[in-house]
Length: 124
Image (tube, rainbow, N blue to C red; front, side):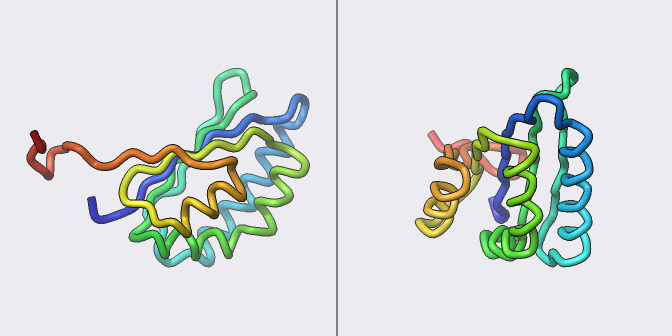
């Protein structure tokens, strides 16, 4: 696996869906304008409007660090006013620095190492 993939899961504060949508749009605007190593940044909201999943992919771990620098202020507003219970899952190799960042901003991170896919042979 040559890139880093992440899934973020968060809950939307009751009665704050519209504000959440507006702030997510601001985060997307900033990321779109400034990120240079982001491959995927897709937001999904549950049918009942209470939870959100963000699927992210970066050229490398450095791409995630760059992205975080760009969206830091807008993300702080998102969690202050509209979201809570942030959990992260990483798929790929994860450095100690990234684990520390996840512990600080998301209460830690579940990490899955690549096992098998169309582009690689299974390791037995």
